[in-house]
Image (cartoon, rainbow, N blue to C red):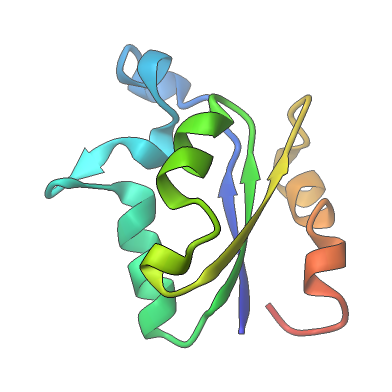
Length: 101
């Protein structure tokens, strides 16, 4: 199954932490929040993930790579300008195709 992870925001409510890293990379119990989410998605049958990125995308792409280390396949859509929720989902249309996600 496929899932879209919306990770493109600037995390302004978590400043100054998010000045250094994107919000999904802030740690909880020794791991980035997005790693917890990835593990949860995998446990529930999601194996293909499309991640929308904006603020400091290299932090996420460097940590997760293609997703193999986490038992999933990951691809990224980097927003050059903020697209909002609907725009972020729309940017993953090619990934989703006609399948449920």
